[in-house]
Image (cartoon, rainbow, N blue to C red; front, side, top):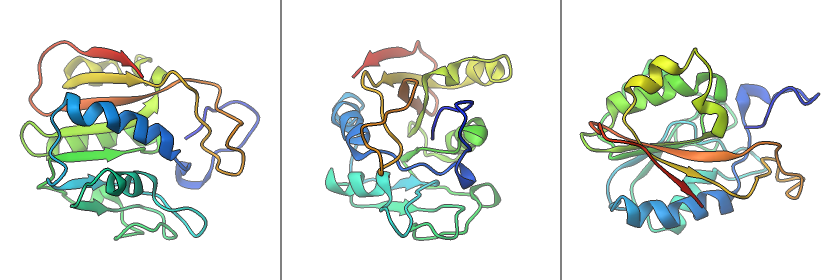
Length: 190
């Protein structure tokens, strides 16, 4: 995940290593705020990982005590339990929490599918650029999405472990959806 149009090419399959500190910062507020049961089934459909890097969300979730995490990724070289698997070709039911950093160009599709498939009152968490809220193309999605919280990270992140101090040029947020939620969205800066 990286901002585009900066004179660089996008990584294959839009794969970027999510910094662990970013996930840790989010989980520290999200778990108590949403009363998340860390023993319930959790799913990361875009788990990532490769020969050089471990999967970001599954690794941090495990460090937070999550005991039932399923992983999947479309990339053949992913460390996911089921690599080389197209999320859109399978139904993934039975999860209370789906949490991921999906490819930006397919983020709305991932969100819609995850919200449909998560258990009733379950949560879907997507790390995205804050500007994911914009554009006319995504407006119909936002009109009906059960968006409960937006956790904006005050510190910019680097998605390249080779250059951890070279952060991205835009802000990121964890978007929290809850299946069946119809209230207002809260915005939190963390």
